[in-house]
Amino acid sequence: MSTAQQNFILTTDPLSLDRIRSILNRLEETIIFDLIERAQFAHNPKIYRKGEFEELQKIGFKGSWLEWFLKETESFHAKARRYTSPDEYPFTDRAELPGPVLKGVELPKILYPNNVNANKSILSFYTRSIVPRITAQATLALAAAKRAKGITGDDEYEDDGNYGSAAVLDVEVLGAISKRVHYGKFVSESKFRADPAAFIPHILTPNRAALDALITKPEVERKLLQRLRKKAEVYALNFSPEGEPSGDAGRKIDVDAIVELYEHYIIPLTKEVEVDYLLVRLEGMSQKELEELSSAKKA
Ligand SMILES: C=C(O[C@@H]1C=C(C(=O)O)C=C[C@H]1O)C(=O)O
Image 1 (cartoon, helix red, strand yellow):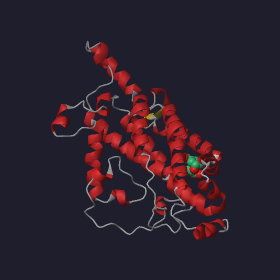
Image 2 (cartoon, rainbow, N blue to C red):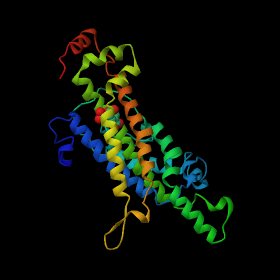
Image 3 (cartoon, protein in one colour):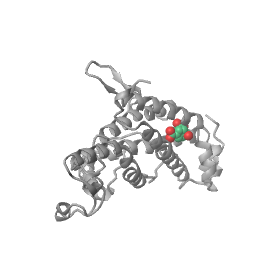
Image 4 (cartoon, rainbow, N blue to C red):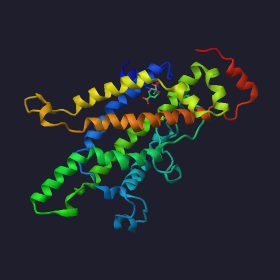
């Protein structure tokens, strides 16, 4: 599917699973490249801890350096109505963001009204598990360079002072992961509409495990992880000035780290969003509406 056909406005069938899967596939590129960019800087743990920067406290901001970046960036994006789109969620509380300067666009209402939002979990696993892992190479190289200058002990590690550059990239990675994970809502809506009768009893019970089994496609996940490894291996290659790929010169990022990120965080969280969305999919419906839906033919 061409990238133009992925466009929400141009497509004829926004809920086709093929279209949704092609978007998830394209987001793999975005996430891998953003992680490669972030991996050039050291961990810089200071930027993830609240209260580390006196300068921020002085201007009345109580969160971490990264939270400040998120709030400032998202405030601007909110003005351009980014978060009125059903696949874009801010990390900052909406109440703290300004309203859009442009009037809202009339997008077709495809999703059922819901407040499912996984960003708190995304922020937490990204900063605790992902950043330390993908920055390990840069952090070790930094420590070696510092030792060569006679700096040893605790001051050797982790901090290269590139707080702005690292946080700009964190904001990019987080936005891409968030978009990917919340796409789970479209996946669920598509699967639900294809066979409402299969889902309804488990939504009413409610039975998370049964819903999880209904939406899980092990074969799709297996192929995804295989494809992702191949993509990461290729994109992370270093090239000689003559354009020769040199696998021996090391890769720009730890390929296993990317595959594990998907396997242990991104896919499970997408499925959690899928199930959370299904659990509110019938809220406010009358008995008659439920019966009509239950007897709707399998698509
Ligand atoms: C996204 C889908 O739903 C589930 C979640 C997947 C994922 O997060 O990549 C993959 C397959 C399914 O188990 C899908 O069916 O494509």
